[in-house]
Image 1 (cartoon, one colour):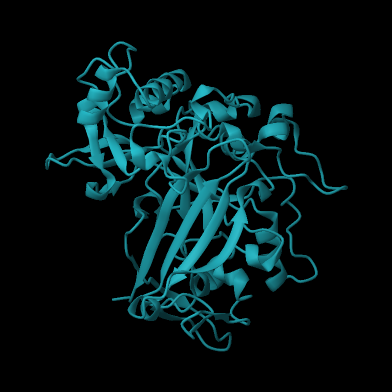
Image 2: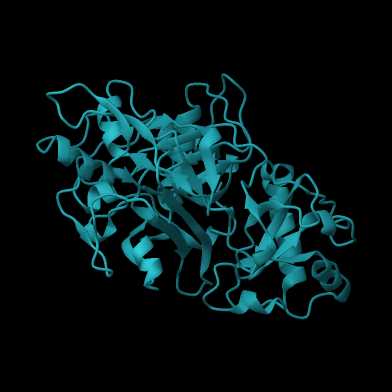
Length: 435
């Protein structure tokens, strides 16, 4: 299922919420991403909202009025709408109409009553519980770069072009943008001649990724056909899969990541829906001549034509010295999600193909997104080439990997001629010293 472009995507739409008309905002009326935040009145529960410009629409207030009642839509939590694409479309249409210039007076009054400045919101994870987290490895450029460091003559494993590679991550350590990240400890064996030691990570890294949330799940023992995969995807966010490279190098064989990945994963707070992304769909990655075609269960004509998503991704760093000297964050890399070898539909279908029961609120990430060029490498491991090529910063500092006090800021946005630019907000985290 690929959403069609409709009137809610009209680039000429403007809103009576003036901040949504700023050409630089991530949140124009054409976006309307979902989020969850702590109740402003001090209640002990979180609330669903929709971001518009610099405001958030508070649904607990909105559902008590007539605007949503007339349309038989009464959501309070993201779980209430994430499993039903028809409900999502209806709600998007209602909000788009009510937020446009010259709306129905009653609708504007209800929306106005429900608006909360985003600056007053403490955003939390979009779903009340992220039950499971899976991270893929779907950028062929990233996989080739990393493989070249360890296996220069044969960087890609034999299975890479046949099967979407992934691992099960730790859901309990997923944190929202702005959460500080404590440097992890683990076993380090940088000297092959001596036993390992248990010390704070020396080679801390980030990974620029995009995540997607499962809306409708599937029953245990069943699968999800590739042609129906996107019916099960609610929307996308940005993901920073923090990585302890020195710990990873020692522990990952033979079963893969463990402590090197489970200490923290940062996500952006806004879920950009699949419908909002409709104008930015693109063809799946064009495989080189001689590459194997996807196996039958991963092959679909619609997925091949529209399975990719054109999302520009940027990574910035700001060190403690840069903050002290008022130096703006420095861009480390820029990449694009359309360069993924496997689509999100193929990831989800493969995940469920053995009978795994995906559940509402599960988070699935793409793996590090890198491009062909050095400037498009989505991790410090690649940018510094395993620490052998230090990165020069405008403060006069250099970095091979992240140091205490460093903050990583990730941004994502979609831009295409004849459509309004939409964005994802920020995904940021600052490194604190280990205990």
